[in-house]
Length: 114
Image 1 (cartoon, one colour):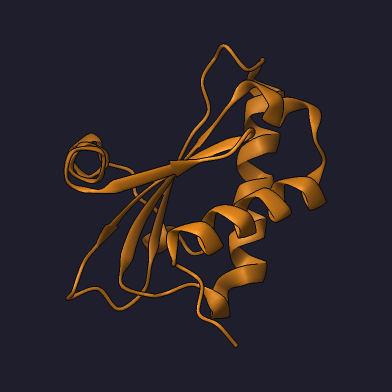
Image 2 (spheres, one colour):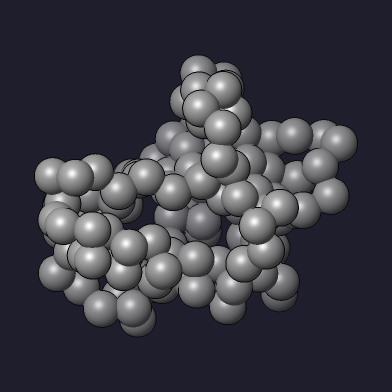
């Protein structure tokens, strides 16, 4: 995932939290906000220290980023998306993370039906 497709600033995170909508499953929570002028979706990730040490947190973030890389063509482009990992995310592998991300995107209508 390219760096310009990531949300990094706290101000941008707060805007999505306040103005956007959310949905959750057991492993992840998604917040999303429609942005008309945006050419490509942007993703912000949050994994709490309560979930594990730095190795575990970084692994979860890598898995989520890779899931977005693989789902790239099917995600609607004009959105800011924030994914927050929940406690059960530390115990699952990449394929389950990808399935969970796919489920959230489908339920929130952010997937393009092909």
